[in-house]
Length: 267
Image (cartoon, rainbow, N blue to C red; front, side):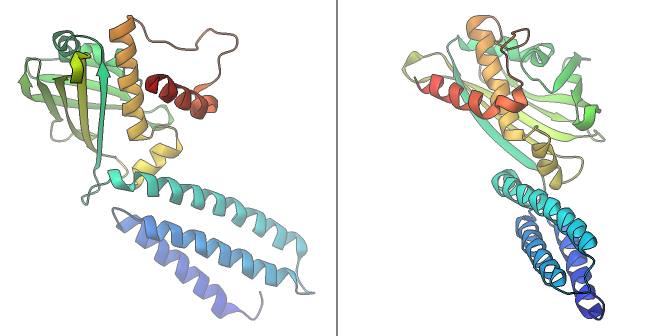
């Protein structure tokens, strides 16, 4: 690339501009896709460099391999942030809404949820919930890379058999709030449980993308938690593949299991 210092500088300016755009926007979907386009440009530039008789073929190949890896990562991140962008509010917080029908009386499900110490039984990311007073509780959750996240929460609304709402206290590591509503399902088929969660990831809006890449997508996590709640309330236990010789790892078989569960639910 000797003699093309202007091009090199232009590529550098592009990288800096894209970085600023990604880190300064609550929904940097467009900026992430611009990185994918930039990666393609970089590969095209390397292709032209490789055609030069003075090119160091080893260096060109090594650079192309590195940029190809970055292209794959950028493309995956762009795709996943595009899917999760609808969950991101203008202030960078994440809002998730999910519901499920459980074939049990409202009173039973409300009483289970109202005792917050029960929630780690159905919520995989929770390690423990300790009730410290009538309206306050201490939560411990599993974060990325095995890191523990703790916060204090208070119950701000409690209508028996109708609604429970809570929010984290000021200064918590993860700012969050949520509510769960209990309604009689159509046709008397049990209880309709509606959950709404709002939280601000510690790393800002990009935290949602990082969480998704690490297998902790907020929307999927809530959906799986509700499925475990349904299993526990209806069958008295949560079905798992642990201890089964033919059991598949969740990370490997997620698409298969997810499709199977949807089919079973539809049936």
